[in-house]
Image (cartoon, rainbow, N blue to C red):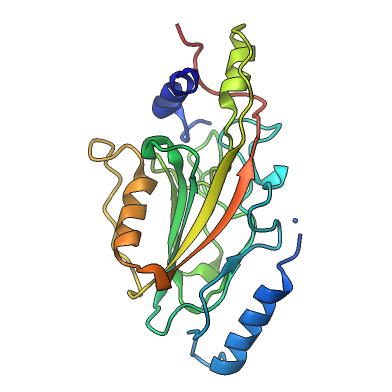
Amino acid sequence: MKRMIWLSCLAALTLGCSSGVADEGFEQTEQSAQGNQGDEGNHFGNLPFLIESPNFANGAPLPAPYTCAGNPFATGVSPELNWTKGPNDTKSYAIVFRDTTITDPNFAFHWAIWNIPHSRHTLPEGIPGLVPGSTVVTPLPASLKDAVHSQARGFARFFGPCPNSAVTLAARCNRPPVAPVTDSYSFTIYALTEHEITVPAHDPVINPNYVDRLNTLFASMADAEHRAVLTMTSDAVPSTVPFPCPP
């Protein structure tokens, strides 16, 4: 109950304020897919669809630089992500980042990127976007072509794990200490059968969490064969939070 009170503050004010090695099995799978399919215009795979990161192992804690740990709320650097080639009908990829511990979708979904070209099998570390505290948006790398990304409230910026904003807020507001928590997170990649997905504009009246709405769309377009998941945990505590003290 206490946690949900803190999260209520997050709903109105969040998100607009303001390296481990991939395991050998994954590398061999990707190399096998390249060997079987070639790279001359053919970017499809015939092996299980997998996603990994050189920055952390599946199920392991996400290193601090990719979270808000010791930094202001809503900060964090996106990790590098690598995946094997999607099924034969893949024409683009979409990736969704979410907190799987939180059941309320308004708070669970953090970030999404879509319209990644089917020829790409890597998302580089440090995806750029809206510069905190300004209206300047740094464009995505040219290699991602027409890809688009967004946070939950419609801002083009990565939002890393930050499950313990309540800890920082309690300390700032001279409230009783709040016990820190460790949440589980996931990157889900969807291999989609359209070159360019037309998505609805963010409308907080329809759904305040834009990434939740996007995830529903992507999931409706991809069966189990066209999905892969990478999991991690985080107990990150931010240095500052933009929320007012609760009454």
